[in-house]
Image 1: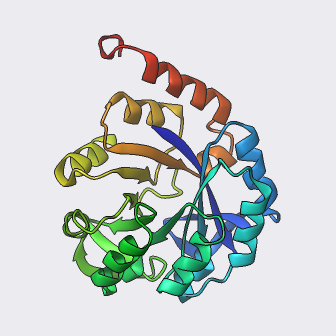
Image 2: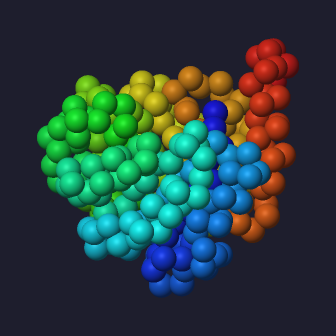
Length: 252
């Protein structure tokens, strides 16, 4: 299970939001590329980057910052990018310029065929972000709640060639309240697709409980505020994660 630092871009700055609210963003860096390099230097093998302006307005507002992040990192570091990817051209822009995975959110609700077409053009490189508020999918940068249930959307993606689902519990995102690991366990075993957990991770114990499930469908966990505020030490978390991976199940 990978531990994936989050870099959320808002007006070209590295920020964190609480429950997706843009009213009071916390700014952690004016140099997102430097922040990305910091996490990689500490051992991260993958980064999760979100263009928050893009998610809100449907455009690639921070694409230059994202390209600078890609240029600052070694080629073997995986980069997954979401926010504002609403057509083939925007997905292609990122995937043809060094981004490993493009994350589709709002358009997955609005146009399911679009996701299928993208998966055909870029096999294995399309992820779908499911941002859930009380079990319903939120869209347009979390500013609207759709009439689609999160589980129904997840099930509909199974045969479209989607590489993974990034499932975010909005109520817990940025709140440091802990993760509900059983929620992810049940979801993944129901849909039987790779899932990356997001939202609410507050400390090392959340990560260890998630990994202790030994659920083969849980690919990783995205960590944001807990890293930025020092509640999780990334090298220590990676080391302890490797210990769990190496230990027999009977020792857990």
